[in-house]
Length: 119
Image (cartoon, rainbow, N blue to C red; front, top):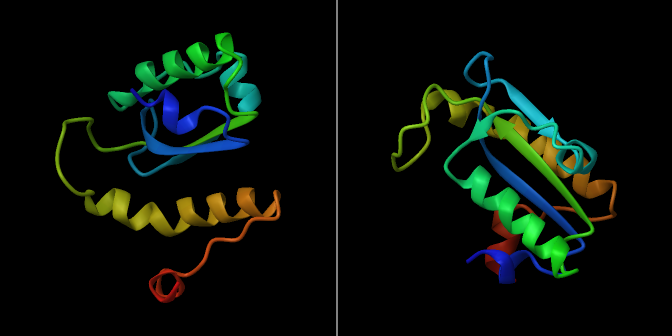
């Protein structure tokens, strides 16, 4: 169960794929308001239904993150595989830029990977 990993978090950022009628590789950013209003009308990877259910459970238990955002990319298909397709790999820099901007709005900065190895 994922609930213990997200309970009582201030902010939860979810990066995943989403099955929308859009070009593979297109990026969609769902805000907390979109999620709360039920504005996600697409099936994300197999995690979406479970994730939204877990968030609802956390709200009932009053342990939900204060804010949740989803940064999603439309895949070529939703079949289960290990690794990313070239289309998704090409979009990673833009996804990370969106995440970095969102984190910066909360005075949080991602450390470069090399810096993490030195810590």
